[in-house]
Length: 174
Image (cartoon, rainbow, N blue to C red):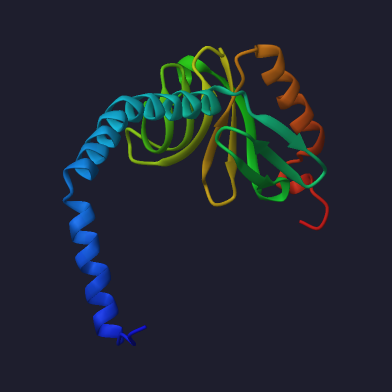
């Protein structure tokens, strides 16, 4: 057996690759793969888009304890109750006009970061089908809007939030 140097070995591999790559039989296989990709790519892309929309339409779960308001699922965020300066409810018709900056805005669902017409940054996890919206304002002035399709769920969360939330003057160690 002849001892080939590294240069000869690389030349041998490259020469054989060129022969096999431009071989008409291999070109036929490559074209078949590309034809299949033309069919499967739109299917895969559509499935991914449907999955993304499904995740956005899921109603978020809420976790409220004595220190934190946490929204899980679509439009996730967490706020320390000590940092909240205002909690109230507003009608959907009182919502500011907003534009998506980073998040999901599809039909009736808006989740993520948005800007108002005035340029203020807001965070939304709202469904336009819900008639009532919880508005949270933190001590930095950031505004969060949250609601659920079911007005009873929105009121339940609002009431639960109010059992833990206290105005800054009423908080211990203020």
